[in-house]
Image (tube, rainbow, N blue to C red; front, side, top):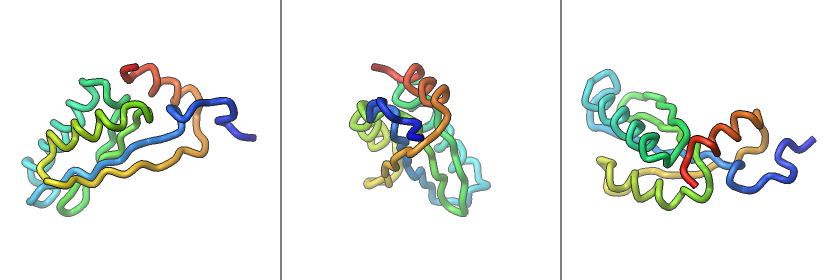
Length: 110
């Protein structure tokens, strides 16, 4: 069964961005940068939510948004990121909780 049959591309993707800092993940500057960036993305309704995964020197942000917001999200991250060339990649969603995917749609701007 295809959970996405009849659904548009806007609910079939998640977006990921790597948020980096120059200090170990345990230090506040890195943590604060990740919190600030995730907060601004959600506040601007560029994504429904953002998860942060910390590693030694970087945080991986898993940003759930819609295809139609990709360009605005990329510009927002580039403007607010410490790196000149931040990592931004997209991954297809091949299945999932349809109520959760609808929540993403309802939580982001049109």
